[in-house]
Amino acid sequence: MLNRCTAVLVLLCVASACGQTETRHAEQVRLRGLQVTPPNGTSLSASEYEGLLGLLGGNGATRLISLYRTSVHGTTYGDLLDNVGDTKPLVFVVRKDKYVFGAFISEGIQLPDDPTSSHVYDSDYVREPGRVGTIDEDLWIGGQGWSGGALSLGIPTDIRICSQFTPSKYVPAGYMGKRFQLDGDAFLGGSYEFMADEIEVLQVVQ
Image 1 (cartoon, rainbow, N blue to C red):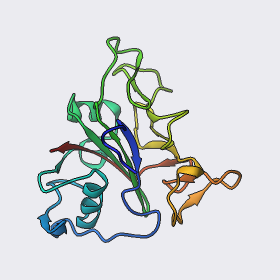
Image 2 (cartoon, rainbow, N blue to C red):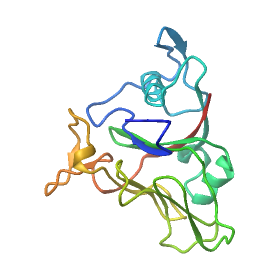
Image 3 (cartoon, rainbow, N blue to C red):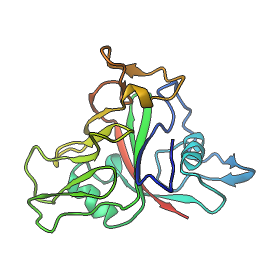
Image 4 (cartoon, helix red, strand yellow):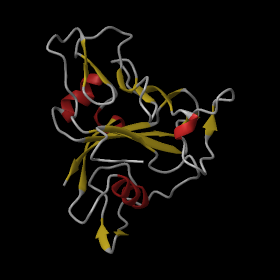
């Protein structure tokens, strides 16, 4: 589902619209014969971390650094920006009940020159609001014409207010999560609109 050569942004199903995963943060797991340990402060279990590295094409040198979590650093867009800055590439991990999914942005967060406007930049589609945005502006990853669907992180005052969909033709075989009844689009958060339990942003280090 992830092609690092051609895709600058992808939606990745880290684990579990298909079932629950155990949370064992200190556990080590094996990735291609190597032991890997989840980064300090992450919400990822050992098995989720292993799965995410696999989706990212990880090797023995690839690792993730947890930069931001809503439960630790605050839930506003400003809190996210303060902790993430211009770091890249980034993985966004979203949790809602038993669902865990996310998005990858190779170019990181690029703010507009005008803090009251927004910035659309090269990826399949990323729209970043400025620090001083209107109440209806959000961080939008993906959009029309993007094969992975779209993920929106909510209004500046609480980014946990999310929406997400993946078109039915791009949903992997075996997916057992929620779908839109009319066309089969997948809702990786259990519904199109939802309040996330946790949002985490991690840096990918090669």
